[in-house]
Length: 335
Image (cartoon, rainbow, N blue to C red; front, top):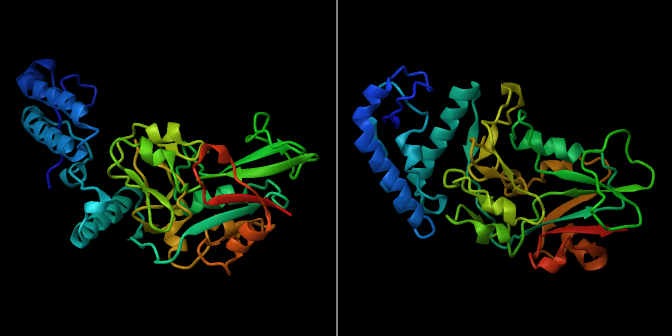
C-alpha cells in the first residue's frame, strides 16, 4: 500500500522542495488543517470518524508533495480499535508488527494474542518484610517487555523508605550503594491493575480498558498520546514514549503479544500488564521469577486455594492509596 506523503515546503525534511513548489498544495493543506479542527471537536465521540476524515484530507494533500514521506502506512493510519478487529484483521496486524521488527531491528519476532482464561482474575502480592531493594525485578521487567534502553524506560519503580513510617514524601527511587541499607525498607511500585481504574475513565478515545482477567491494557495503535491516563494514574505506573524507543537486537525479547510486550512506537503510552503474554499461558511474571527473596507472589484471585488468595485472607495487607477507591489487584503485606 502507498505511504502517506504530506507536503512540506520548508526543506527541513530533506526533500529540497521549495516554498514556491509547495504553494501548489496550499488549498489541500488548508483542507487538512480544517479536518484537524473538525476532528478535534469530534474526538470524544468518534475517533474513528476523525481518523477517516483526516486520512482523506491527508491523501488529497499528498498530491502536492514531492519527495516528503513518513513511515506510517495506510493500514496503520486507518487501523481499527483492537476490539473491532476480525481474526483476519489481527493476522494482518501481527504480520505488520513482525515485519516492522525485521525492518527496524533485523530480528525475527513471534507475536501472539493470548486471551483471558475464564474464571481467572490475576492478583499480585508483595512482601515488604522481605524485599531488599535489589531492583532485579525492575531490570527483568525491562528485558521481558522490550522497553526502550535509550531513553531508558522502566515499568517498576523501587522506593527506599525510612523504617517506622509509611509516608512516601521522603522516599527515594534513585538510591545508590549496597542494599538493604540500614534503617530502610523497600517498596516496589508498578501498575496496580485497578478494578476501578481512573486511567481508563480519563482516556478520551477508549485506547485503554480492563480485560476480563483484571489486566488493564492499551491498544498501541489507537493511543493518541494525550497522556490523560498518565496524569490520572495515582501509582505513577504509565510511561510515555517521547522518542523512538532504542533497543539493540540482542536486547529484544522475540516472544511478544499485541497487548503487552511488542515493541511500541514513539508517541504512545505503555505500562505493566502483569506479563500477560506469560501469565495467560500459565507462567509467572518475569519480575517474580527473578526475585531472590521470594517477596513476590502471583495467582488467581478467584481461587481460594491459590497462594495469593491465602495471603490476602490471612496476612496483614496494605492497600496503597486505598482511600482513592481504585480497588487495586496489587497488595502489599508484612510478616
